[in-house]
Length: 363
Image (tube, rainbow, N blue to C red):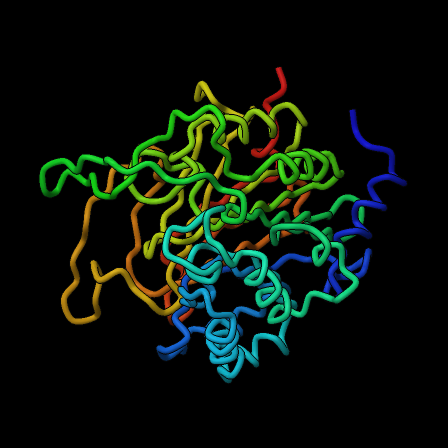
């Protein structure tokens, strides 16, 4: 059952960003990215601007802060803010953000990070969250933003997979070289473990009930891929399953996931016939890094590295990159292009969909 329009408008007003588009403004070009080292050159911002984004989504590791000293975090955010390319992007379009571990404050950290409340203030100050915004009054940096008129609505839901997240469990066993099994972590079987925390879970269910044609869910770490040993929702399989079941329970259509963190880019798909399916194919587009390539791909010596991911569609891209979501609303069945682009804004990975593909098949 859908929420009454009045209640939906109340939810929208509570999560409204000062940069949010007017009700009747159609959004069709969204750029996104993750993993930006404030101490390194950042030429990619100029390329992002050339794609004429109407919105940019920062998916975490927006700086490499890694400190319990808030003055250090502020100084590092300021280095990002001083970048001419980043300033140009701010003049081009709104910027919305969630965080991952390094801008949260510590590598691979979760709820145990002792300065998370203070770090949240630093984060929200940098991204210009108004002092009277409800996000200032609650724990965590999760937020939602509704753009566009009825029939062309895009609902951006940015999750916080750090503030409440339970400890990771080490013990991953890599395979033989070249088999693509690397990492440190194994799935946690702790029944009390969480990724989002109960308050955010309740909030997410409310958001998935808000009427929209397209729902873009941003997560600092991958949701669909669950076989490697790095950080991901798959470290908490019960929580990952809860997320997928919630999409199905709320009958939320048009869901696309954007993620970062990995210092590689790929497109993963949970098929409609998968046992944990949401009723239609669920795509997770991972874009990383904006200026810290993984080292498996260089301009002078191209190298490729295998990584197990049975959900992957196409190839893995290891060099500097950002992502774009393009929506052609002019078609009777709107066309959605999920893209990864290189440092020159050339498309290197793409999944083209129709909006009807993101709805359960009718019998």
